[in-house]
Length: 197
Image (cartoon, rainbow, N blue to C red):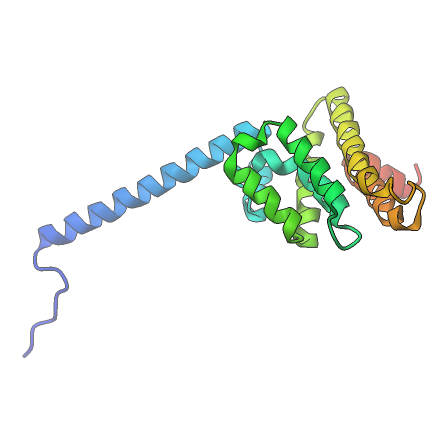
């Protein structure tokens, strides 16, 4: 009768390898926990649903500062391409946020301006922004929303000023900005508006 083949020479070797695997898993978990802590700090929320949504969208602690620039990128892309005026305006806004020092964020923003992100990414990012805004006091929420909409208009105007703000070229941008404004309303206001209250 043949003896069963054992992959480990000794019991001690088995436990040594198992301990090494467990330690490696603990290190990975600690790194993920630290990454999540930095994300929570950067977007100023501890809400696990928001953090989960950000991770699913591909954000990490280095790219989370781009969160409020994504609607601007969406406005730039809505007519099918990003022109130089729009790109320049977005890059100036990013520089004003200090993102030039964040190489990962700068590279990611450049990539989004070169290759259009998916509609799901834009929609998911807006939903996360809305959830973050809903967690803020009303005055702060209103101020941040207005600031974001104003920045979206600046990007739109950067390209539309050549054709006139009311031109057909800019209709898609104006429509998207109105849509973003509606999507960023608190859930209870959106529900009430839909119900005609």
